[in-house]
Length: 119
Image 1 (tube, rainbow, N blue to C red):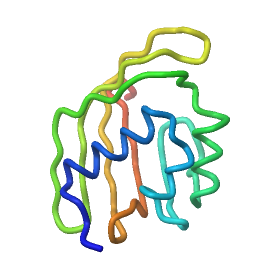
Image 2 (image 1 turned 30 degrees about the vertical axis):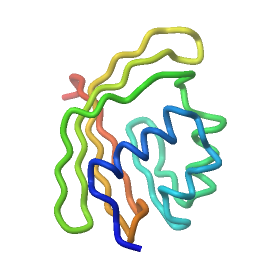
Image 3 (image 1 turned 60 degrees about the vertical axis):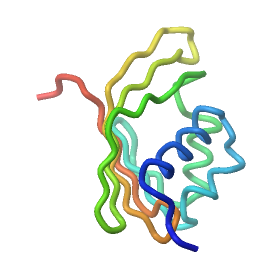
Image 4 (image 1 turned 90 degrees about the horizontal axis):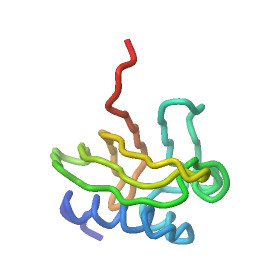
């Protein structure tokens, strides 16, 4: 299967996440994927990524806005903004950048960064 365009891929990924369609995560992540994001040890394997989204993620609802997508070969970079609510009802508004390394048409590695002062 040919990989989708970078924009279509990112739109599809966030459609699954924002729609809370956790049963479809296997469509966008490989079984042996690794997902890294600030504040957590790396999530290794599809089952671990699914557990994060189903049970641990601090977000109750929201939507990713994609501002830019750049791709080269099997790598995609996405920059955007997330707006939503935490599980405790706190409004969330955060800039982010994601880096994806694909294996075919699914994510093998994902790194998420947030736009805030850190160092």
